[in-house]
Image (tube, rainbow, N blue to C red; front, top):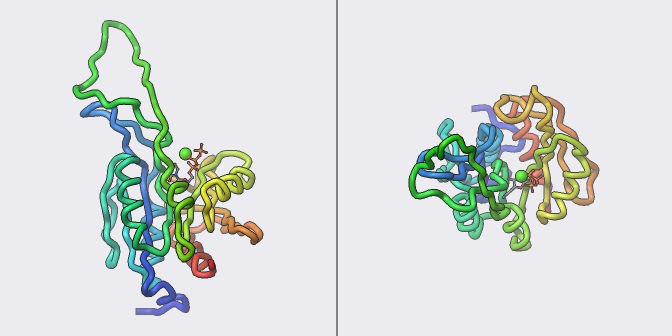
Length: 222
Ligand code: CTP
Ligand code: CA
């Protein structure tokens, strides 16, 4: 086993990471979701255990098992919200890598929705609660909260807005308009915002290398 210089720096720290896109049920057989693969969240879990952290991964997606990572499977944004709030109460760091659906059907039909003659179907959607913002607003002084921002334009401006609105200690901007990174790709390219510091861009690299670079920044916070 080859030890890296940063191994061990998160020993004794409990980190909660969310990953994957949430499923918002429309009826017993259908749901709304998005293109998130969960890969970035899993890569962060790998990087955090390498540094000695205890990791809880709250995820909608079954990928590889990671030694030292406890997975909690959820489906909807509401389930992810409940598990994240509960787990973070005894944790040190929260990383919100999930693509949480902004909207859910206003109601879930009890039975499979049937076609009506030649009519279309209008869906009535309502907003989901914001997990990151809720946790950011209520964090204790020793706790660190980290979010992502998926953007297609004005990346830095939108990222700065989210950093403030979510009370985050770090905000990682993903350019989701690029086809060579993000979502199901094995690579990513991000810009890291930390209050009071200059933005730092990590150019295209594997998600595990991006995750290691992010965790290296995390240990410099507070
Ligand atoms: N997030 C969350 N709960 C939600 C929506 C978003 O925890 N209901 C988190 C995401 O996990 C991410 C951050 O908030 O870490 C930003 O998500 P993003 O979709 O980029 O921003 P939104 O605040 O949802 O705003 P919008 O999609 O309108 O740009
Ligand atoms: Ca959103």
